[in-house]
Image (cartoon, rainbow, N blue to C red; front, side, top):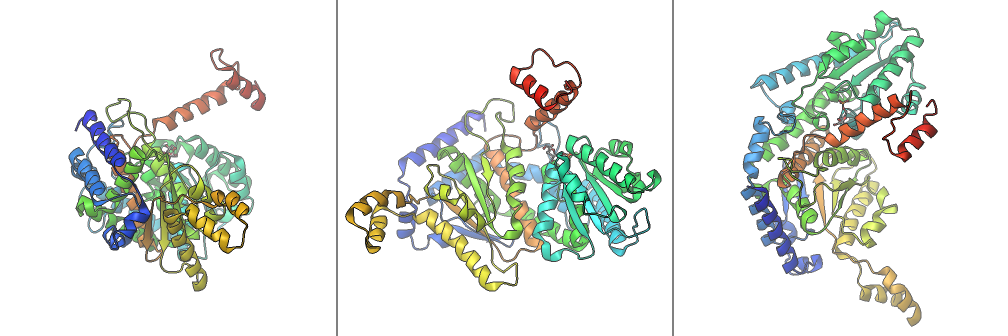
Length: 539
Ligand code: F6P
């Protein structure tokens, strides 16, 4: 389908939007079975999407749009390894990283070999056979990486707290702010510490700087140059650069250009998960993601969880002017899920041109934000309830308690459900007035206060339920959002697998650092020149 007909499909959706009076209260009042009909269970995940501004006709329109644009073929192409990343001329085969059973092709064979290497290494470390420079076993792992080489494994290790081994602690350092590294190292015994330098490109500024400082730290602690290989391993597709840095060849875990950084937690970038929680835990995570891959490949569009989530997001983005979407995992251990999702969604969909390089005449990616519930209720939920923007919400609830505190878990779930109900119902002026009357306020007070107590409601949300937060379900949850982002990118005709905007920042960062050592180029703007003089005063 051409760009014009994509725009025409969006225009059809917009006119559908304008023709209806959208009231969530009314949709539920007139349709007692709505919650059942607009819910779906697959791959161990339950999605209630009934609290959305959708009728059957809306859904059909969205599904027709996806079908006419060729979504089924696009899904097949992605999974078959077609060159879906057209600007970098690569496939995006993160699904091959979680294949199950016997390897079927060269990608899967490479992955199988890498898994064997990871398993062997984890066993060496866990058994205490892998020793540091003084002969002591390794008890601390520090993962040095940023973006996709940090967010995924960091989030998963935290989410899987009950699976964490007691004999090893895993730390993450990402920021080029030296405080990140030095604060982490200040509490660690160098002789028991092993670093993973995780960088697909092995050229990322933050990671290189932190890795260099880590090397100095361990040498200062008494490690000899020829013992460094006992303290450094790397995960990278740039074997030459990793070796130049001084990583022993046998300590390099491969990455491949057919895996994007933000989709890489399933590769050896997931090594911290295997080290922190055991290799079987890492394998269970892969298996969970694979379940969703199968579902994504096989389910019809109308029963396909990632497709539905993407269509709903597309609907609000294109027709409701929703510039942001909030994600609210009601699970303390998923605190870092929104940060992981931010990179996945915003780095993938924050684009201004379509796959052919033509400027988009419709909005692309939106702001993804959020935090763990119930904490957010006492900070930003006020804006969700009474602010002027419509912000669709994804609630994530875990049925079984993640702690032994069952009563508190019930309260947590009650909070979660109450928030989506409040967003839906709101509070009318009449209800606000009645409430104030019941509290005994005077007529004058009621008149003054009631408008402040009105909550517009009619605000949409999804609720996603996991039976429990275990490695399998976590894998499924992450794969669900990965595929959702792919479908959303497809609907907007953008390449979700490149990130040229980030590259610009990387280029300019080095240029400024280098320029600060000498004369500043005349053609730089006055603000930049002034800031360099003020903050990098060597100049
Ligand atoms: O932030 C840009 C980015 O290229 C991400 O896509 C990637 O996850 C991150 O930098 C880290 O890159 P690398 O793994 O190559 O160090």
